[in-house]
Length: 503
Image 1 (cartoon, helix red, strand yellow):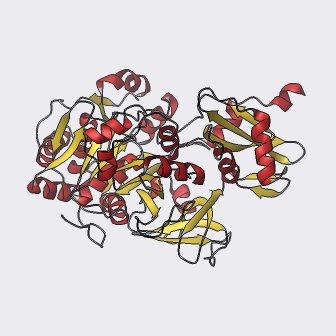
Image 2 (image 1 turned 90 degrees about the vertical axis):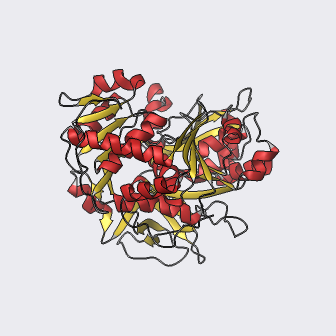
Image 3 (image 1 turned 30 degrees about the vertical axis):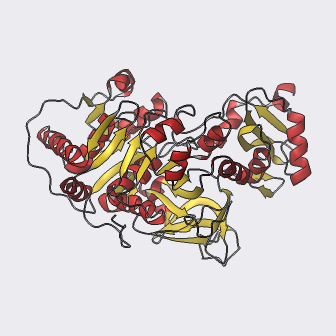
């Protein structure tokens, strides 16, 4: 069993894939189809595709779009781009046609690997210059480009909930470091097999699981999408030892009927939660029911995923915190961008080998995001004396009511304390009296008799009337991004404003 190195990975993705291929073994299993992909077959296929991409006249560092769902073909397309020295440009299939068209245009990609099921979407969004490729495209094999750790490797667009998406550029060094921070925090070895139910066109799926497996030498079970009905069965069939999900998935599993087998529970070391805050009540209830520890973490697209993680059991975990820094440094900054002492709220900042290189063709946004070598996350929080960070909200999501800052997460936690609530999010609504007022949206389990009045009363009892939502809207499902993160900022536009309707 090989332990992960304590120093960031050196070299390129090509170097690491060559090393894994020389060692042999299974790289990926696909529970839905029963297929397997070995490291040497993955390397050989990636090298063959990369040589043909070079033969098609694609320059080193040039964007090659990948329009694929999770699956073997998507993995081959990704590794072909990385192995060949091209900028793998992951297209978010859930982003909508406008966002896809923007990414394809902004990235200046001339070629795109497109899954047959996504051909209509790609054709409708593609700029005229774009050539759509299958994995069997015809081109001469030419020698691969020489590449180094600082060459572009990945382009991934942010969700763009408050404006145009930004193209986050990672080089080979930072991309590998993203897998390394995960492997370090979770003590991954070549004996581990992760379970990926998140899309690899999101940074969590790509760096935490795909790059985590490459750096640790372990393997990965990959499914096309999350299924609450199939999750535990697929995990058992694939012999996984850990999984990476998001809070909404944890909530849906908790409210589902399926349970893991005793054999699976004895093999599972942990489950991992990221992408948004995990409610304390949800985490506690999940662990009590399933007997699987949940490790809460935090990461960003700009940091190749993870920046914080709770330690593994039996070390101390602090429920309600995404943990301590692993593989990078984290600080809390004042509005003047000075470091703050323990237990003082400010903006969370990070620096380390996993931090992005730049926002593509957007020097202003790049400059605004960095303070020296510190990347400003836009998240608010504080650090306790033990180094554990507690996130209190997003700068852009704060509800400012009558001049007082209200963190939506505080309201979310109260709503999640009701067992019937599966999804919850508080949000701001413009208000003539206070500037903004508090409302919330929830999705509840089927058959629930919860009422709006009950939830408002619960919040008022726990938080007081000023911080509590004036309205609680009931939805079948809350809007989410590709990772399953609830998109709080979309709720005000999505839901009717009763005061305006009655005015």
